[in-house]
Structure formats: C-alpha cells, structure tokens
Image (cartoon, rainbow, N blue to C red; front, side, top):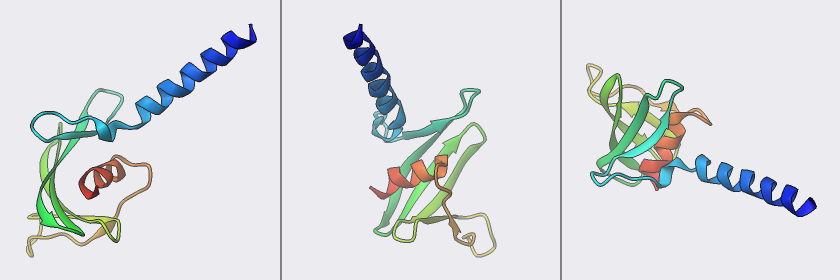
Length: 108
C-alpha cells in the first residue's frame, strides 16, 4: 500500500513538471507556444532578429500579431511600430505571466 501511494505521488509530481515547461515545444516553422487561456486561445512567439541583449520578435495570438523588442539584460520589452517614434516606452515583464514565458523563449 505504501509503495502504491508513493508511486501515485511520484506520477503526479512528474506530470506537473512536464506540464510546467511549455518553452521546449517548437513547431517546424519556429513558433513557440508561450501559453493558453482557459478558452484555448494560445499565444506564440518567434524570434525575428536583433542581437543580445536586444532581440526582436513577433507575438501572435487570437487578437493578431505584434512585433516587439526584448531587452534580455533588463528583463523588459516594448512594442515596435505602435507610436510616432516607431517604438513604445519600455515596460517590465510581469513574473508568472505569458509575457515572462515569451521572454524566456526569445532570450535564451
């Protein structure tokens, strides 16, 4: 009985670890899934250029695609092409957000 309880607990922990790491999944065309909401709408990220620490990337979701720039050293991002200067102000990435997962994708 103890062994069975241990094995069930181990299976739960192993499945949790597998589900927590969405960064590893990549499609053949270079898009990485960063996360999905409860309705099944997912957000995908793809590097398109730049050099460390400034990486340009596309974010694609049900709402459409936007181009952003990541500052991988300061852990912040900004939109490109949305303002008169062509770039929005920098904003910090929130811990635990899909944006943070996106930063992990484009900054590695």
